[in-house]
View 1 (cartoon, rainbow, N blue to C red):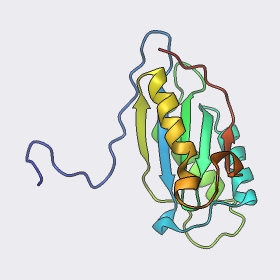
View 2: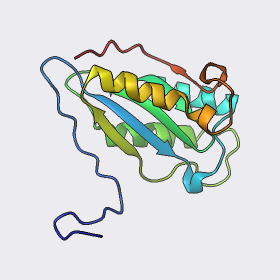
View 3: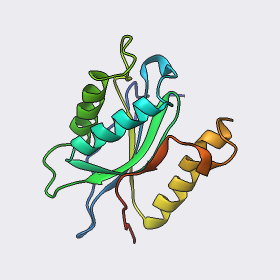
Amino acid sequence: MESPQYPKRSRPAHLEGVENGFRSCLYFVTVCTHNRRRILANEPCHALLREAWSLASDFRVGRYVIMPDHVHLFCTPGIMPRATSLNRWVAFWKSWSANRWPQATGKVWQREFWDRQLRTGDSYSTKWLYVRENPVRAGLATHADTWPYGGELNEFSWHE
């Protein structure tokens, strides 16, 4: 039931990160393909996304998993103070990759994405353990380590 105090959202809210002392913000981001098309889990797309994330240097990507119809990744600002927002960074790499897509057929990405700022080192470890098992839960791999469309671009030493 929708509360007048808390109306139902039609789009995710993207709140600015809250920095704590000298520790940077760490985000968990999920981006889906347009109409949840299953076009991501292949080597050309994996290479293209890694290149896009490397070029979009305002944020650095840590661990990630690419599923057939969505991507989970962890990221943190690459420079401080931040030159751009998380929204603009995601928009950049989605646009860049869509313009170079190996099998271009219509829209590649959903307009919106989901993000959550992680608040403790434990939540990073816990969230990663859950995310890395996605291919196993979906029946795409027998073990998380055998799924070829995931990895880590930058190592984050993120502690409490």
